[in-house]
Image (cartoon, rainbow, N blue to C red; front, side):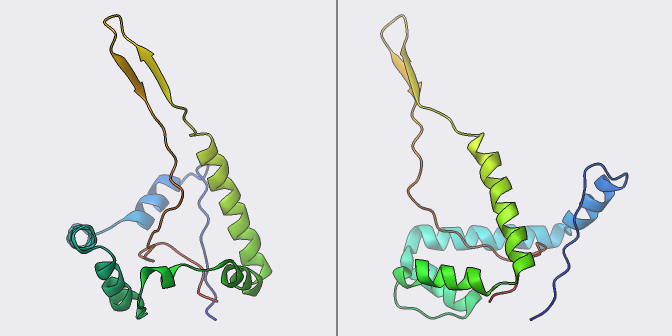
Length: 147
């Protein structure tokens, strides 16, 4: 397993702005290529659905499966992966998850509505998703190696 060094930035450091800018710097040509690739992938998934997801999974992850359901990780596999990572990485990931959860819990919104003077009902309905799927490419982000 390769040791990954993750640099921690602090907003209170005098060089924070330049360090962050350097970390996030993308060449315009690379950025354009990434955007075009993403547009293509989203278009394919939108128009061809699961078939496109399976093709991209095979292309990018070198994983050939017959159905999208096979991509879902069960609780047993997730638990095994959690138990297999080094304690330091586990603590760091759990702290990161706690911070992300805390941040987003503060974004909770509620549904609301009212009736205007002319009888028009206006409002907002907030409906959380039951589940979401995502693909997280490494790019410039440091991510732990697979177990």
